[in-house]
Length: 275
Image (tube, rainbow, N blue to C red; front, side, top):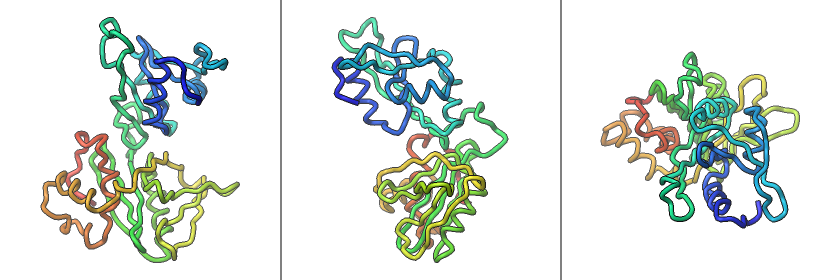
C-alpha cells in the first residue's frame, strides 16, 4: 500500500500498521469499513459487495462494509473461519470533532479468545501456545469460556510427536509462538510441518491436513515468552508466591504461560489451576 494522500486514509494506514495480521473494521459513521486486501478477503468470506473508494494516486481503493448494529454476526463468521479481527471505533462524536475524528482499536478478537456464544458451546475453544527452551518443548492451552488451563512439556526425539498428539486431541482454534522461531512451515502437497524450534535433535514432523485442522497462527514478540515476564504474571493471577506447586519451574514450561493468559482477555479468564 503506497503512502495515502488523504488524512482519513493516513489515519487508517497508521492503525492498520499496528494490526497487520488482523482484518481491520474501521468505523465510519454507521458502518465498519474495510479497505484494500482486508476488503477483498472480507467481501469473499462474508459474501458482501466489494466496492471502491475514491481513487488513491490513480488507483481505486477496494472497500466493503457492514452496519455497526449488525457487526457482531459478521465478526463471529470471520472468527469461525479462522481470521483475527480488530475493531476500530470512533472515540469522539463526529459532530463535535474539529478536524479528523479520533479513532483507535478498542478490541481485537481472535479464534482462540472469542467467547461469543454464537461460536458454538458444544466444544472447547482452546487458545494454545508452543515454545522451547533448550531441549525442552512446552505446550499450554487455555479455554477462556470454561477456565480450563493445561500446561506440560516434552523432551527428546518424541517431543514433536507428543505436541502433535496434543494438537489433535485439543484442536485449538489459535496457536501462539515466538515470532523469531515459527513452528509451522508450508510444504507442497503434504499438509503441515511441525518442527520443535530450538530443539536441534527433533526432526520435523508432518501433520496431515486431514488429521487436525490447522489453527490460526499468532506470532508474538520473543520477550513475551521470557521467564522474568511470564512467571510474575501467572503468580499474580493464581495468587501464589511461587509456581513450584504446579511443577512449572521444575519442568521449565513457564516461558509459554504468558501467551495463553494474554492481557487481551485477562479480566475474562476464570482459570484457578493448571491441569
